[in-house]
Amino acid sequence: MQWSLQVNETWLHRVNPSFKLIAIVLLFVAVLFIHNINVLVNMTLFMLLLYITSTGHSWKVKVVLLLPFTILFFSSAVTMILFGKGDTTWFQLGIVHISEESFYRGVHIGLRALVFAFLGLLFALTTKPVLLFYSLMQQWKLPPKYAYSFLASIRLLPIMVEEFFTLQKALKVRGIKQEKGMKAIIQKVTLYSIPLLSQSIRRAHRIAVAMEAKKFSQQKNRTYYYQVKYSKNDVIFTTVLLMVLLISFVSATFFPYFSITDVRY
Image 1 (cartoon, rainbow, N blue to C red):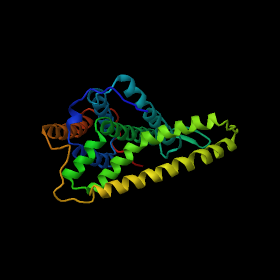
Image 2: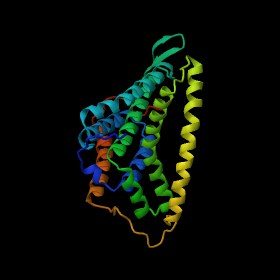
Image 3: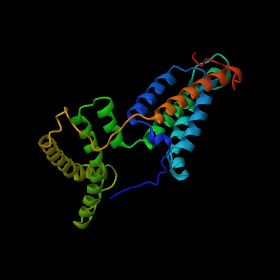
């Protein structure tokens, strides 16, 4: 069983994967310390623009992937808006207390979740796992035995899904009666977990023996099928991220959407 998506390669696909990973992690950390809601609004808009124009996927894929994060935005924002603390009360009924402070704090948390989501999607949709681990081995000196182990585990996921469906068909052919309610859950765990787990252990053992035989633990004088290097796209990527931060802060200072500049209470 194979899944494939039509992807148009963009400049983000050509950024060094490990460099992209480090840059996005640093931006993750930086966003944690931003408490100005105006800055986060700008960053969300810029990230949305990058997501639309630079991931290379179809509109259908982009919209489907964005749906759960939109729900996450509303759920996290509404929770804080309805039950947050604040002195300027807008509405109160029972335990529900909507204040000016809780409203801005809720929107701020929702926007922060959206920025995290866009950063994660930008990385996941424009990075090939194989090139990421080759880059980690070549630029960051990750031991090959760990890198190839991760690669092997990723390759095994489709095989496990295929085995699940094969097992499902085999159980139907054997006429296994389907239980209902909680018994159905216990029955499925019993019928599926043991065969799939045993097959995975056997396959992992065979792969480990093969890797040892091929000297994957050897690090010196190793050659690589893929050569991953730094390029001008890394400079462009760094410039774009810095410009996003700079423009977000400058426009939030001179053209704020909201009068509040710090949502902490």
